[in-house]
Length: 315
Image 1 (cartoon, rainbow, N blue to C red):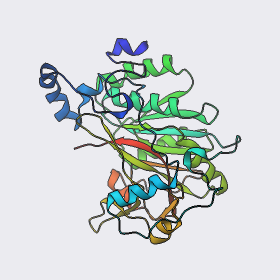
Image 2 (spheres, helix red, strand yellow):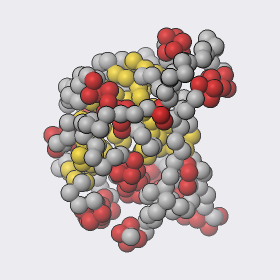
Image 3 (tube, rainbow, N blue to C red):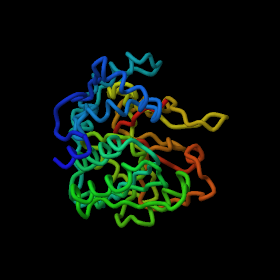
Image 4 (cartoon, rainbow, N blue to C red):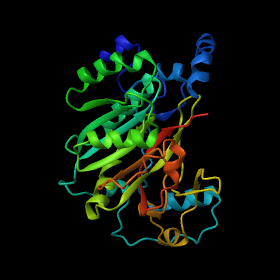
């Protein structure tokens, strides 16, 4: 495949398949130390993991599993009630065929090439083709040579017409970089993501469906974790998003009425977002004066948590 010229791997097998932890030999571990310190995650190992690797599908299929998970986590919540026989769970839900198309926008600066391309491959592999308008890569003035011609040549050949690259001439910061991505987008829905994520099966339909119901909604996914040292996918339970008095984004337990409903597929209404992922039908005004990522966590507009994908943990 095209990835071989970049020293990368395609296909669904190999290390880290199924979201399991990937490992290196002792000799490889020595080579990995420098890149690990540079990026905050094991970029050397990332190059040994396929761009198309499979990851777990955590969508619930029955009530019993949800109740057990709640108990295992130690949440002091009301006992789940048995649902009506007609209740459908995430994997069983059906969505309209005429959902709006989404433009997926990845923001990056000096990210590891393998991680960016795995984000792109994952988005293409797990988003129905008729719903994916385009993928836009916004380079916020990176210095790394591999993120210039090699990146552009790869996506132009691998995904001609589908993936676009937007390059800022100077470092703009996250919010202004998002605005540049939004300007280039042509889809009805825009989704903003960090460029170190992997999408799970069925992530797009619930997001697009809820925005189709109300284009003023901003939808956040349920975010799982990819461990920075071995790229193991670690499940995070559904949670609301908030922020501390220091304005750091944090996860908090959903409100009581959500637990009482006993349905993990229901959205959770929140007033702020994790900065790494959000989708909306109308571009809420983002303050171009907020250059850093942390400012995006303090935007207070109605949002909903739904769907699922995973994001690389950085140190």
